Image (cartoon, rainbow, N blue to C red):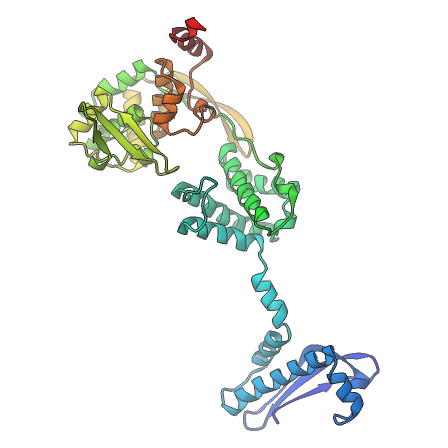
Length: 425
């Protein structure tokens, strides 16, 4: 028999059982603890005695000797079949047999890392639904993926893997510090990451994976800051539209037209930079309507096309050219500079979570999202009903829309006083 078992001590009490694997053919003599403990006086009993039989018929005795027999058969089978066996293989065989229950339990135990992966995969495949019963948008899946990767990096840099019960305000402080100082995120990006994690933690709690209430309260989440993003006035918009750019590249012409479409539709660049014939609807009166399913939210919006918008779409046969967002940003800043959009604007930025005031010429602050903000703000200043604006922009509430309306208080008062309904209340 190649595999035998022995105790390394003859003293009374409990001792670990060791396995010895010998083979003159394979030239091995391996010794390894099985981590199984046995009373020394029981082990030394005669194998044919009634006392030994009574011992191996106990629950602990049966468990111990069944595992020893499985270890022996597994190792001997490798030797008989000439597969060979090494000390590392013996150690692995013993570990997998002796600790099988713990290994299986660990495989099925849901950790925070495992749950974030599960949540992300289910959201991407559509097997997990939103609270409204719809599929998660690509933007949400991207956010969850980002949080998963950030957590892995944060755990690695902190030298500690947090689980559900360890997510508390100390974790919150350290994670935000990592987002600010390691990743150089601004306040809103860091808040989005933390709040996405909080949403995942809430889902895990509702599914029974943890009962940690410290990460579920409103105070755990981070508040987003109303960023001083600019919008363009009607005069500035006209200047950008009319400025001579014939000496610039064709991409500049494309960028300006795409940007103006963004203004007139008040959509995100991911939506207005991809408008084609499939997005065009004509009603019974022949009016052109732009129909878009927003990539970020999945919301379906229909925007009646202004004459200015129709002119641009007709120019391209209702198939708007597509250029990368980075190229649009670069071109539209240059065009805004040529158009004289150079008013000094002071904005608040954040670095490491610390607010800082910076002053820039306005054209430096113009980018693809300025189009959406400009469209929403100019609709508001024209006296358009805020609920109708929401229908165009796809915002789920007026509160969300308010973040995009950048009119000052005088503009707001002028808009209210011009509302026909205001005089009647």
